[in-house]
Image (tube, rainbow, N blue to C red; front, side, top):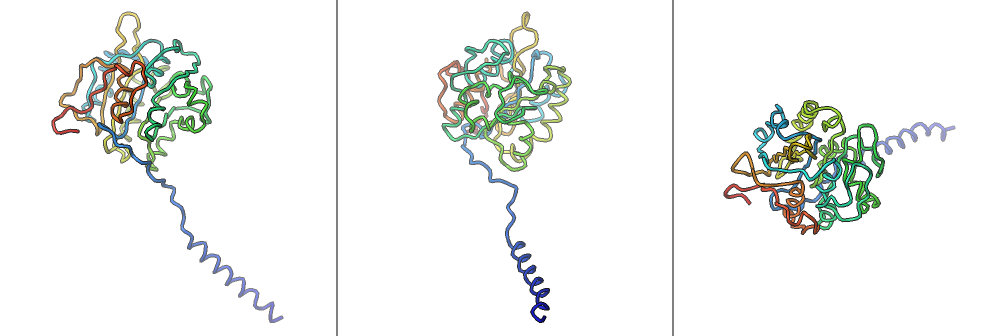
Amino acid sequence: MKLLSWLPALAAATSLVATSFVSAVPVASEKRAAPSIVKGKDYDRIVIIVFENQDYSDVAKDPYFSTIADNHNGILLTNYMALTHPSQPNYVGMISGSTDGVFLDTESNVDRKSVVDLLDSKGISWKSYQQGYPGNCSTGTSYGTYRRKHNPFISFKNIAQNSTRCANIVNADELDKDIENNTVPQFVFFTPDMNNDGHDTNLTYASNWAKSFLEPRVKKPAFSENTLFIVTWDENKTWIIKKNEVYTVLFGPAVKRSSKTDGNAYSHYSILKSIEENWNLGDLGEKDADASALVIKDQAGTT
C-alpha cells in the first residue's frame, strides 16, 4: 500500500522533468537564411514585371505608370521595342534571345538554352512568379486566370523536364513569403494574371493593380539594396499602324542615371543582354549577342 502511495508523487516528478526538457529544446525559427548573393556590375537583384498589349502613347498618359520613374529613382526608355506578335514569342525571346520556333500562342516546347542556364552556371538564384499558377511543374495551357503563354520558362524542355528547375516556377503568392523570409532570389520574373496584366481588362485596371502591388513592396528590405526593377509590356496594342514600341521603365536603388529618359534603341533582347553583362555570364549565341545592353548607371563616380 505504501508503494502505491508514492505513485502520484512519482508521476508529478516525471511530468515536471518532461516539461522542463521540452521547454529547454530550442524552437526552430521560421525565418530561413538569405541566399548567397553574387555581386553584379550594376545591380545585385533584378525584378521584371511584364504587362499586356498597350501602346506606348496610352501608357505614357496613365496616372500611375507615367509617374513610376519620377517617384522611384527611375528612367523611361523612349525607344524600346517588342519583338513581334502575338504574346508568346515576346516572352520566349526575352529570356532566350530568339523567337525561333515560337510563332503563335499555342503550346510550345523549346529545345534550346535560356537565361536559366546562364544563371545556374554562376549560382545565381532565380524564380518565375506566376499569378494563378497551380504549381507542381504544371504544363497546362490555362488554369483560372493563369496562361501558359505568358510563362516562358515552362516552355523550355530543360526546365519543364527538370524537377529542380521547374520547382522555381511558383505561384506569385510565394513572393510575399520570400520577402518575409528574406529569401527573394536575385532574378525575379513576375507575370500578373490575365486580369491584372490588362489582357482581359484594360489599362486602368492594370494600373490600379500595379499601384496596389508595387507601392507596398518596392521599399521592402528585400529590395532596398542595389535592386533593379523593370516594368514593360509584351507587345503594343495597335499592330498594323504603329511600330511595336512598348512603354518600359527602369527604377529602383540600382539606377544611377543623369537623365530621366533614355532614347537609345533597345528591345526585349536588351534585358537579357543586360543580365549577361551584369554578371559576366557570356551569351546564348542568339540575338542577345548583338543586342544593346540597358544603361543602368552613367553618373560620375558610380561603378
